[in-house]
Image 1 (tube, rainbow, N blue to C red):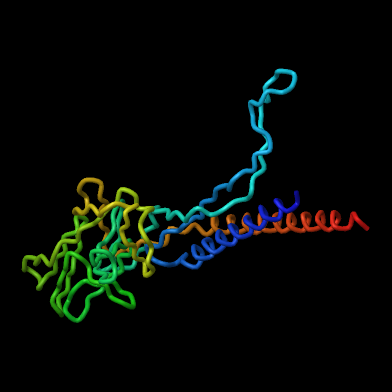
Image 2: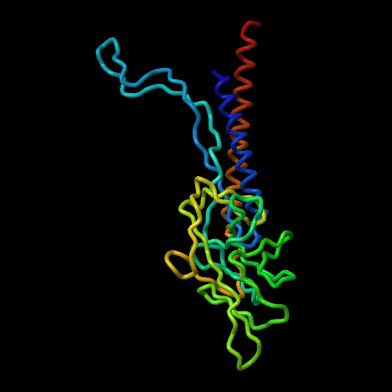
Length: 267
């Protein structure tokens, strides 16, 4: 009946509205360093079984197909796509991008274990010379890297070793080692804003190591990882969502007209 059509179309409008929100967030972060886009995953709902396949007819034949009417669609979750963003040259010595797999580990008191993870490598130094994220909070890099005030010639190697120079003809001094973390299922990470992710049971625990070892990527100084959002793809998804919304709106109108016709039959 038309009632089923109304509910199915209504579930589609709700799901498409969520998809629209996800796409809008992706486009809003097209210039956010290290941002990873998400996509909404859909699945169909329950089915009403009106005829079961395999039932024997009066003539002794078995029905080869069944008769099922679906009850709509729902969003089952949002999946983050951890594709590599393009490196952007900044010529800032504390900007670092990860070429390959891995996350930076930073302090986050409200997160499980007191740490969170990020792909955004826009670092600066706080008043104590510690490497911190250049944002409104300034989470400290872990393990700690400290460079005293007034020092120049900061070098971050592809292996994560951080050194600085006291002057010409003097051997560089090691300030610390940047390590990376990886997860078995990065899509299971919890996004908490600020380019930060928290580990969950779904993501598995963090596995840490030095850049260039095992399956970890290398570090590239003076570069920042750009957003992984593909504007063209997002705009196409936006158009598809809009058209699907229009089609389901027409379904509701048609179902409404059908119900109106049925209601007027007695007249």
